[in-house]
Figure 1 (cartoon, one colour):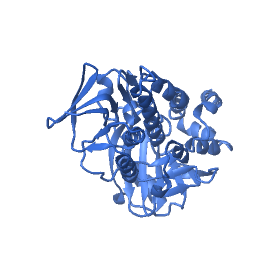
Figure 2 (spheres, helix red, strand yellow):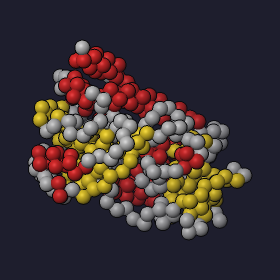
Figure 3 (spheres, rainbow, N blue to C red):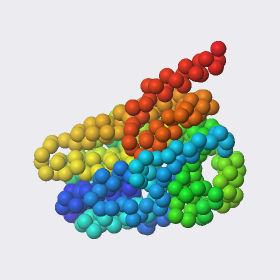
Figure 4 (spheres, rainbow, N blue to C red):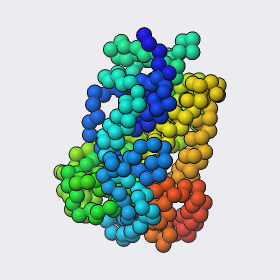
Length: 381
């Protein structure tokens, strides 16, 4: 059995990003993917154009739509529109296209790929990791990257990530035509989903439809009921949507993302934005930062991977700590939140700037939370 430098469990956006950057620096990398091929992956597919900074090749060829306007609504009415600044601040992609493209880049750089590799055991012996598949195949590695998404069991196994995982209940689907959703416009609907919102993101000749609820909820989303209210306003019939429900692991406090020769990236690291459910930017960011830390470690320049956790806390977690606080207040008092947090003259621009990566939640959080709490208290008195 040959020994690789790094075994990456999962061939999604975070795993392939990590793999590319490692292989590009001549590291011996193997992606272990349980699926055979990249099937259609229904999700929002929105990401800031700032992610281009983490890649030496152009991502724009796989971008389906460049968003220049964001439209907000409350129960399909009371709409406001924000114009995004910059030439291409927010991109919409098909996840299967993004993942396949990044995988090709990793493979072309020398990464290896094992498919139908359903990991059932990970253990360490004499500083070497042994990863075993359901069919008995084994891979040995100096380091392991956990990149197998929100349903990953391995963070708990190795006491990494949040001690108490927090999940958003989500539905994501796709419609094979554009309806009346305006070109280059993303739609956010805040009044129809309890403790959350619905969205519509345009693709080339299709639309990504979705919804999520972000406070601790015991029940599943009434998907059909919401679709019946939301879709006619966009020129669609609910029967046109093909999609699925799932639990999405979201950020829930600063936590350790690495151990000795092992680290978490993407959704497995619980990095998803707890307010707007943005997951692609932190997935790509974590893949880039994980590879950087692993390269230093493999080259003997550092003796641990702790810098990865510190960097992710600084570059992402600090903003998400404020995003979580905004989420807890906004979704508890959504109508007040919409009036003061979205309809306020400067608010749509601020949300647009967050989506584009231009500012963080930390830049606006204290003012927003204070305003929402004061307004809710005055409405009760």
